[in-house]
Length: 229
Image 1: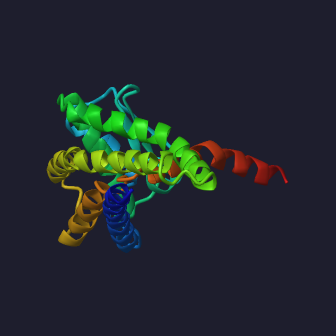
Image 2 (image 1 turned 135 degrees about the vertical axis):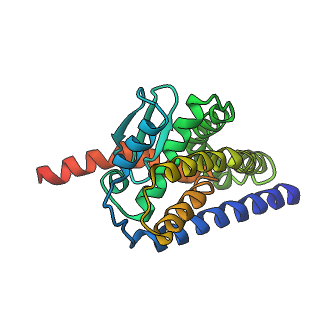
């Protein structure tokens, strides 16, 4: 039992570090706006056009963490707060997703591994939470509960292992941004690139991804209910 708890604590520490790093940098750069006032969606379109990609669409997502690239659909989804915003944070998140589309076109296979990991993270997170709570309630702390901890830890460790894929997307995006000469000064460049780097550790655990999925599912319903009252 002790070894399972130790593995879980290490995984938890890593995910907490990743989330803390992302929130800190994202919050710092959220208050700064680029001089050109280019939006996240416009930046993605310019980046894709620069490298000759004309078969990838850019859409506005519905959730809080709804920033992702879908290789199957060839579609980049940006959160509402990033799609039409010009903050360093919005542009950093947008550019990171554009980098993934560039990876796809250039045949970077680890992108598909990363996408598969995220997909299974979404599928497994909720059942693991439910099973974990049930096993605790039934007092099964020496049988099933350690296995739940181990599976969650393995998911976290595997997400950590795919960070290089995120970093590679960022590097490809940076090269395109440099060609586009988007930034007017060093502060803009550093601010946006800081967010891109932080985004690589934003989804180390399944709960963050699950939050984004849940917000996409329920936020539209909540807004609809609120507007009808």
